[in-house]
Length: 402
Image (cartoon, rainbow, N blue to C red; front, side, top):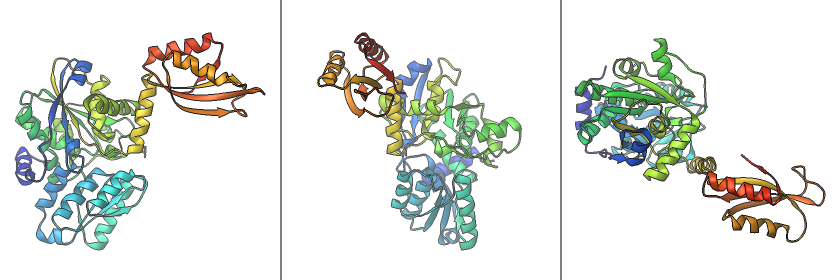
């Protein structure tokens, strides 16, 4: 197992090349949970995630001969960018195998940092198999994203920083995919202060570490898609499972809607951008998955590399869920002035129309009538109910489109 001494050595090795990320107090999450909550913002790293720490520590421990052969890695995105960035800075050639469904922003960033990208397979496991094949064929040096002692030690440097930033921390909440981050963090924290509680968070779609711990043996889960693609690992690491079993106090899971809600909450209230995997610790706190009150808690926001199209959908769905955006289908008689009358009602109740669509053929409209779909900005659930009541009072036939 990785030791505290190895984590400390990793910090000495990488400290000149990796940012000390902020550990900021969050009034929003503190009020939501009844604790004093701090956010460890690893999304502020150069490549947008904590993965730089482990990748760089591994690269710096390689022999000159291992570097000269070139590097290869498999990743859904963040490890890819970390290896690409730090290998290129040290004039080391790198190839990265990424699943075909990897968000475009992560693929483009990996290429921009200097590595050759090989898109292969439907998921991380298939991309990793291809990376291992290329590694053997070309004699490359493989950099594993989580199941490697040097990588685990590098990720553990997050904990050394937060202990300096918040020595009185009582609970640390961290994402789990394959287990590299939580293994290094938990080792550093527990070996420094055994009273600190360590809570891991996985997506309910792929709780591979939780399954391994609960069953007492490795488990390979079926393929599943998730908003938290950065922790979408079907099988936990052989090196990480024993460390999680030894050091981690509890593993909880979060649902897709809870992750999306946490992303929006972090963006709107904390002014910080998190990807799905980066937001799971915040999601666990916001949705009461962790039963603590009055504690000093750190949630690790592990990454911020989210595709803007996904972010846009999350924002739109979040606004609809909060009653700040509504879409209605309203049946109108098709004569001059009908639309003017309708918009007058909407204007009177201060609903702002952002999109319209007419249809005279479908949606069951009568001859001589039309249906109009209206997307509107509203002030919240109470405003929506007021608006619906006003339209019904004017005898409009309508339905709310979810």
